[in-house]
Length: 182
Image 1 (tube, one colour):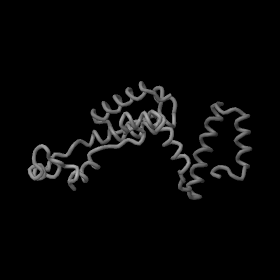
Image 2 (cartoon, one colour; image 1 turned 180 degrees about the vertical axis):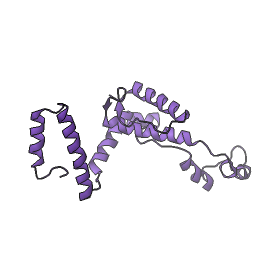
Image 3 (cartoon, helix red, strand yellow; image 1 turned 120 degrees about the horizontal axis):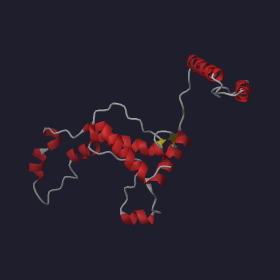
Image 4 (cartoon, one colour; image 1 turned 120 degrees about the vertical axis):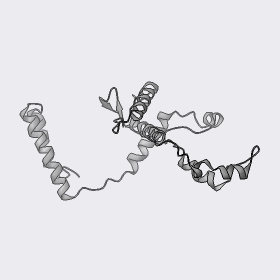
């Protein structure tokens, strides 16, 4: 189950792997040493990947990002930068806003039911499942998938890892009008 320990362990593992130069990080939805999958964890992991990815991009230091001219124009305290076009442009680029995190003030959080990140992640998962429209496979792609599945079934049947009962169920399901992609 996704929890605090899962979060900090994954964060450290992914961040250290990224900093060491790894170019493939497996984490989306995995729980318990990558042995199981949890769909809410996949939402949390998406945020984690986004945050670590943004961190790994680094911060550009150049004339545009430093905005020395703007700093000189606005001046010291009580200088105000929030209404400047430069700020509006760069604040969106320089931050990552996770989808399963709470960004309310403490009083707002208390008034709105004290939802945890797991609640936000579950809501996001349910939204995705309710609105997702898969791109249909072409007939050729369906045939290719079926060939791969058939090879796998034969292999596992030969190794006696699929029982005769399971094969009978498979054969029966093939007769269904919605097999395999209906």
